[in-house]
Each structure stands twice: as structure tokens, then as C-alpha cells.
Image 1 (cartoon, rainbow over the protein chains, first blue to last red):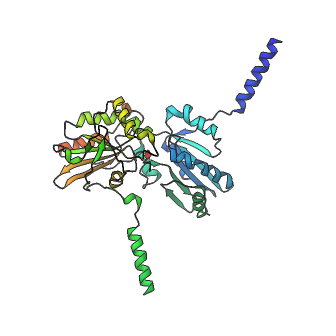
Image 2 (image 1 turned 180 degrees about the vertical axis):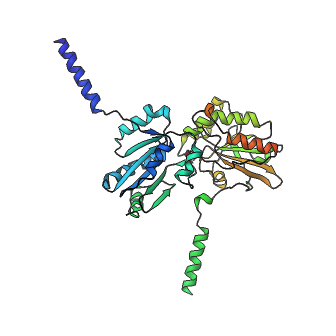
Image 3 (image 1 turned 90 degrees about the vertical axis):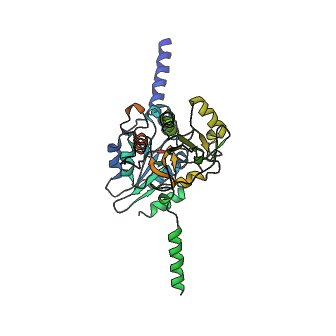
Length: 159
Length: 200
């Protein structure tokens, strides 16, 4: 009987842990991130560079999530995290879980920043957040933050 | 007439609409001196350093993780170059209402904890960082003292690896200051690095 109880507890625990999908991070150096800036199909891509330690980034992040939900057929939001490797477990994964992020999150870990920042955009000075919106016919770089309305207004100029 | 007037108005608007990347100093510009409060209560200007051959001006703060990762390296730069005539002048550009962790008191505590030997100044009315064109922390400007005033010689990052000082391949700031001290030309006057946007 006691064993049964232990078994039941064990089963419950395993069920619980299955429900809490562990977040699997996709971590790349810049060469691995670059293809996400050059995808060529019918979709419009909204690529946002952010980090959990960046307050203005965190503030605008829900707008990107809403945009992804409202335009799920025609738009793909890609959230490029610049979080530090030593905070993947303590900050980034809990953040993704807590806010249940639905957009695609990829992590950029490439300390030689001067080599890749100009490749993202020559105008970028390195402050985040920044956003790139692009599709087959148009591409714009934004060194600014957005409200949802502003973001949607920008997106509509790509359709 | 109306068309000409409209065109004139349009032209004026276009001419005077600031483009963010064009603001602030570029290489070769003469920097305007400032007078900012240090963590010891004194006010500090570039002109106070009569013997300085130049300055390593660092826009930095307590609260940005990238700035924190560079704290020891900023201190090391000051130790290495003060006596050679290139002291570090650190300026905290954030609005402390937005970032209470960057208050004068917090700056004093952090400087004591880390044993900073350089002036750590507060850009209290946020008027100095826009003159430089600083957009983030950390953001470095190397100035060379000349007859014309302090001339901007380098803008950008300290080195090429924020994560690990031991893995740095190129020390941009040291290379620039060494070249200036030796009176030789150098290649890299501008670099880019991730940082935290300056908080308004």
C-alpha cells in the first residue's frame, strides 16, 4: 500500500514535469543568426533584438507577441535574445516560461560584437532594443521602441 | 508663390530635422568642456587636468550588465594610463528617476566597493551625453588634448570581448591611446558594441 502511494506521488510528479515543458534554447553565434535576417518567402519577418536585463525591451515585448498572434499566417516574429550565457538558466528560460512566449526565440552569443553589429545594420550603434522588419520587397531598421499601435502601423506598410 | 513658400518650408524642415545618427561628435571634432558633480561632491571639468595629454571618457553606470562586466577593465585603464597622461573620466548618463540604481548614492557605494580611482561623474541634467552623442553604456570617447581643445580620436567599445577579458584579441582603447602617446597614426577610430540604451 505504501509503495502504491509512493508510485502515485511519483506518477503525479512526472505528469507535472511533463506539463512544464522545459524550454530548449536555440543558441548561435552570428553566423547562425544571420540566416534569420535573410529569409526569403512570402512572409514578413519582424526581428527584435532584446534581453531580459533590458527594461525598455521587456516593456515592448508583449506588443511583438500580440502582433504575432494577430498576424500568425502572414508574419513571423523572431526574438533574438542577447542575454548572457550565465543567465540562460536563471533569467532567460524562466522569463520565456513565465510570460509563455509564443514567438520564436533564438539566442545570439557572439562576444566579438564589432564584427557583427554593422552586418545587422550599418546604422546600429549597439544599443537595444532594435527591430528589423523585412520581406521580399522591403526592409527597414528601427532603433526605437514601439507601442502596439505603432508596431502594427509599421507592419502594414510592408503589405 | 504658394508653391515656393511650401517648398521653402519643406526644405527648412528637411534641413533641420535631426537624424539621430548624425548627432554628437565624430572623429576630429572638438569636444566642449563640461562641469559635472563627482561622487566626492566636487565638480570636475576637463580643464582641471592641465597636464593631461588626453582623456578616456567612459559613459557608464551601475545598472547595465555590460557596464558591470567592464568595471574592472575601466579601472585597469585608469591605473595604466593616468600617469601617462590619459586619465579615465567616467560619466553616468541615466535619469536616476528611471534608474534609481544609478543614483549618486548608489554610484558612491559602487565606486567604494570596486575601488574606483577615476572620477565618476553624474550627468545630472542629461545635457552632456547628447553633446557627445553617447547612446548607451558603456560607450567610450578618447579625446586628445590639442591647441584647438580636446579632439575626439576614438568612439566605441573597450575591446572585442565583453564576456571574458582573458579572451580579448583586440584592445581597441589601449591600441588607440598607445598610438596617441607614441604620436603614430592608428586604424580603428570607431567600433560598435552592444550596450544598454541611456535611460531618459
